[in-house]
Image (cartoon, rainbow over all chains, first blue to last red; front, top):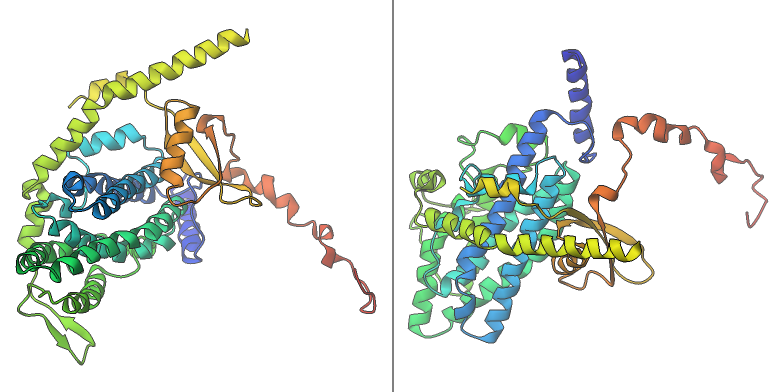
Length: 318
Length: 101
């Protein structure tokens, strides 16, 4: 194809997206569109899978059967979300094994929030409330993104995410209304998860490198700073309601803007964790790789059994 | 990294999943998944795609068995239908007085 033909195709492609047409896997697409989507969607999938680790840690220690079934169901949902997203990414021509390898060798990233430890039961409440809350804000606009399989996967994910947030907030309510020690535990979890949750919405607009292109392809509808403001404005009253204090001395309602002003985010910490120096980076990757390697004989056995069964069926047919 | 084993062992094939949400509706494509065989594909499909009563019936088919049309040939494939307006009832002119037609 000549350069002019490609330019022409690209122009038609951008116009289709501008008209809100969806792009499906076998449609022609610019190489950059394919690569950007493989990167973002696989990282999203990896985040769901690694996201199971900090919470899975608490399943056996959930304080009641009610909490245990809820947490089990939530963690199972995260596995499901990872699978929807991996399958959607595979339609772009990358194999599941390649994606796993990128994750396991550290070449692919996942959301940095999962590199923080879950040291008390209240952390499970804070994760559902804040981390899933921030994830919802990030994910809802993706339900109408331009790549069909991604948009469809996100519709399913968003439908399921609301239960995650509500079960987390319910844990926080319960702890806040409990003994002074329990309330203190809830406050401590909020103190530790608040800032990392704000960072989840991405670097500031001034620092964000992909924004313009992503807006065009509808991978983004609002800027990181807008999303962060939305998250803060909706979360602060939820904290007030259960008597917890947001750990930000600069947080103040701004009548004029109709929004909360908030303090400086420690972006050095953010980049440190992204670069692999967070408290749990090594631990998470180790757990993930170990699960994959220790499951290898099971995958092989299942495949051998399937082949044996197929062979037997063939012989019977003869 | 055990990348070697990843390439030497046989990977589970890809399956497409179709779910009937309730009787009276058709099976609709829900997504795909990997499984060693059809039975496992069905079980995984139940766990991945119908955790909240989304289905009453599931079909799975190995992806490699699906033949798909190529969007690059959409012209010759679908355009012939575009200029055949006479296949639609509105193509035929009838006086307003005619009822039940």
